[in-house]
Length: 487
Ligand code: NDP
Image (cartoon, rainbow, N blue to C red; front, side, top):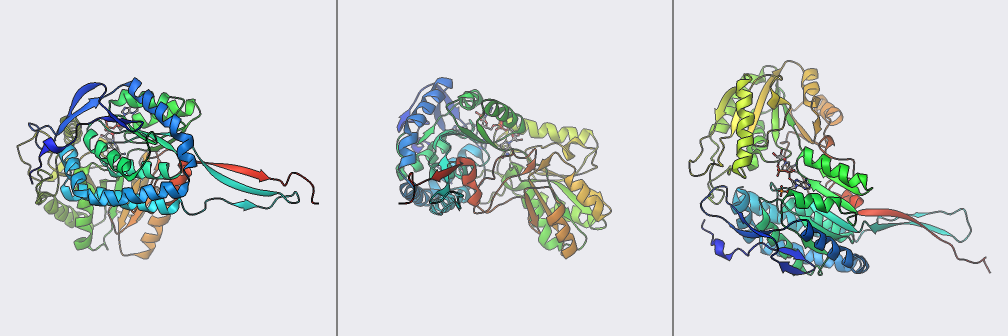
């Protein structure tokens, strides 16, 4: 597929309804075609973020008072636009991030579903009525918006992750300042344009493009009532410390080191493609990707053989090519980190079972790699954000569950078995926010709460589903007394 990059709009900040090109000119690159930049954008600084917070603050009363019906109608229009522009959004996403067009289009369509679902949810009451000890008095709870919300998002799902934060934030009556990742600024502009064209008024959604330091100034701004963040553990923890120090509210979605346990009774025809997809899909650049494969007992040899054969067959290439299954890694810097993780694993004794072949047209390609080894490998405990997965053998069910939980992370975990007792054990014992039975660790439905345990998430309410509004609202208890004795 050929895309005319000259048709992609120049990246600008959206502040108070105006597209502003303030700051240095920066270039957004295509990891599959380094010689063909995707386009230019304006990279701002703390003053740009501050202006955006000012616009959000000035709009917060009018957006709150617009009422749920108007806000829901706007999100419903955004859903239609995400569907109508799915091909355009997918093209920009694939050019900037590298994932396949099918994966990119899926993000646009899931964004439409998210907007529609969050528009519906806001029409349902989340309030309660309580009896009062005083005659004539009514007590009810009210869900008030937080106010101004900072949204900081990563490059790996640059359309869907922002939308699953922005849609419930706007629906609940908050105004938003969004800082997307520097690897994917132009698709962020296209997403913000969807919301603007759907009717989100000036100042209710503001987009600022710039480096992490700009994000840092946004989270430090005490006019920002809450911050929702997805990304790395160190940045997430530093945001948590900054926001909680000024008593703001913070929501974190961080890393994972997700296990799939494969038992000897599993149907390998079914399990192997799922495990490979969970490990290598989206080039392994998912927080829910399967990093650890735990083979229980005698299934080990056949499982390793079959996983290896499936990995060798993966077709790596330009995401614009419809034959491609696995795109490049997002940047040369990110690829270098993944390569370093693999080199270290090999130096520590990991054995490479299989790799896929890669094109030589870009330095961002990285061969999906299946390793075997022991739990002493650093890669068995540390997240390497790319298409590498390691198989370890254990001899008992007890060992398998203990090993699955032996991690600082707790985002997703899966088991492959047909034994109902093992399934019961997985449901009750796996320490993860997402537990999948006979399914990959990746993938989630948008009407269901999403988030992790341990270091994978903060302590705030879950994202997505009917829990999404919990983070973006404050509960107020309201006592309504008639004000005079019964006549
Ligand atoms: P980061 O955590 O550095 O970036 C995520 C977002 O935070 C980006 O918008 C980034 O901006 C911004 N940011 C960076 N520094 C700050 C700061 N001090 N204050 C506020 N915002 C900041 O992730 P990376 O993109 O650098 O990826 C690094 C690693 O993070 C990956 O290797 C992976 O392990 C993990 N990761 C996890 C993801 C997940 O889904 N949980 C998604 C992506 C990455 P900018 O892009 O401008 O630096």
